[in-house]
Length: 309
Image 1: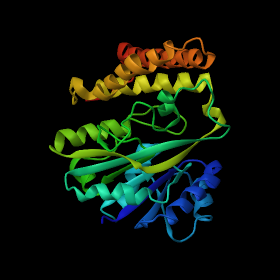
Image 2 (image 1 turned 135 degrees about the vertical axis):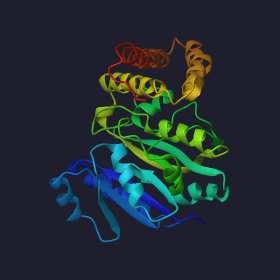
Image 3 (image 1 turned 90 degrees about the horizontal axis):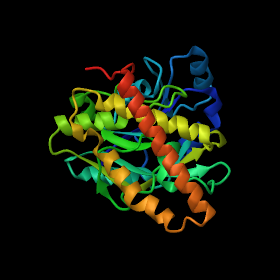
Image 4 (image 1 turned 45 degrees about the vertical axis):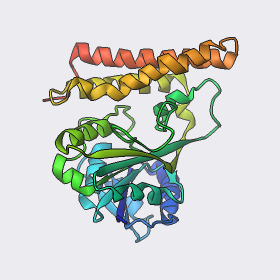
């Protein structure tokens, strides 16, 4: 069975309590990680804070630059195992998380595996929030496969890749993706698309039995956050699809998701629109789709956020 280095990125002192919970869940795994790597932004105050509070069985690494992609790249470069897994600092792993991820690597053509991300709502799930939009809060959403399947890319809070992949296709792009509290995304599909183009025949697996639980704070449950996250999702897709490297199939996953919304999610609520919950969720779905298209269109038209050649 493959050995796994688990990478956790941290950018704020406010997240110590959640990070300790995450690390505790990693220590309890049925298949123990080869190592746990905590990657910090290059902030001297942050570095001193965490180095004085983390025990010796955790490897602390300082990123070369700010932002999630730079942090993940630093984790990969310092990893000593043949598989590198990623989990968010405010998530906790099910006891069988690594075991269920790693079993997929018995197939030599599998180069990446992601799992199911369940939300841990701070105040319970709002009645107006549809499960189809769980991606807004960094979790698996209704519309994903319900059983093991091959996918374009995993979701960053619960994913893994063979370390050799990065040596062959390069690392996460630092000009795409999350930077502190800026809500850009897209580093996972961008990397995964490079993998599919440069490693013909390779497979990325979605394994829903590999579960992590992701905290959803109160500040992520509101229309302002919903709009901003949806808008910047659109901007991110424009950045990726605007690259000359990629074919028109780059957004095929998004096309399938949109078809699911139009054929399943929206009609199911229209059939019972007399229920206030269904009406609210329908309006929220349409609001999010509008925000995504707005971000995508504005980024395309202004060309001020060009992806680069």
